[in-house]
Length: 459
Image 1 (cartoon, rainbow, N blue to C red):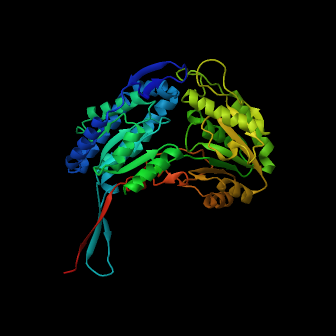
Image 2: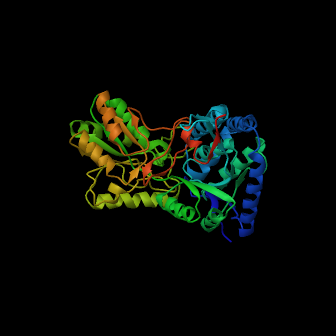
Image 3: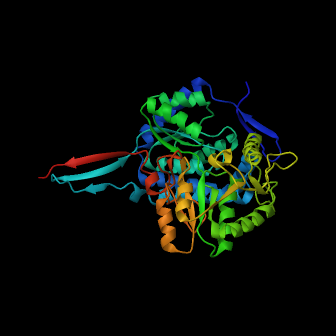
């Protein structure tokens, strides 16, 4: 039987190794093993868990070249970006290892009724993580690191196009000394994932992926009264309020749009520019975008690699073609690169209107849409009109105005005078159809914990 778990190099179209999907019997075995491992892993001390997470970080550093090469083949990530992702992963494991005592410390309460009370954070059990292809190591780290530190156990279903990196991560955990079955990689089908969510031995599920995938998992989890964290799509606005330091603004805009070939949920996708500076911004932004070179992700002179798959390239082309057919202006790019591979030109669209797919849909690739608005109020209104609410960016020279605009955005994250990014100690997540819950930082470790009240009466 053909497996969906296979490496297909998006730069060449060449098919690599295929990995067999789990049988239903294996799924039951995984559930039993993870549940059994929880009973012992939860009793280990914080220093013991921290030592293992620090070893995980060390192994990521030691194996960086090999790990970077793997995801270059799997989803086309440039080597420099792959290594940047791994450096971020290292910082995440170290953050939770180094700050475990503080993050999991008892919280004292002074009860109005007298006596003494604390809230103690405890592990809850076996968790399922369903992860995407665009950041194969980082997405897993921000789920696995805090939960392993708490004492939960992990079952990890990675994206079908990332089986090699999934296998490498499981081996890395084992080599770091993580007890057997505290982290289990499983090549499960979607139906098998639903079976796991329904099983009483699993207590929660975290999904990073599409809105469609999140809705399906949330429905199954709700039916079975399971806690979920959902990090879904985004159509983040990048608001430009004035032309002061326009060169730096454009540089940040290109960085925010083109990282990972534009394939990031929190990438800047809609550029909303005040009319006084619109023409200058469009000209400068288009000039930089048109100079970017796409190609072999392993070549040092490549600015951005291919899309993750042939299907992704076809999907983006359909969105762009729809906009152009209805009157959008292509400032640069607009089509696939001829030849083999899932390559797409760096693209800038203007004059996009509500009847076009590009107006409401997330463009997951190297394509940007620029809008002109009259003032800051109009910029906020357009930014908030999206069904998504993951992040946003505000650039401007007036600190009071930028803070006011940022405060009015309906998003989980806002970056002021900076392209969006990620860090181990900064919470990540959105609102509206971008999902529920948070990852990373002090908030990330609180998602799958039992916050147990312990009260002792006075005297």
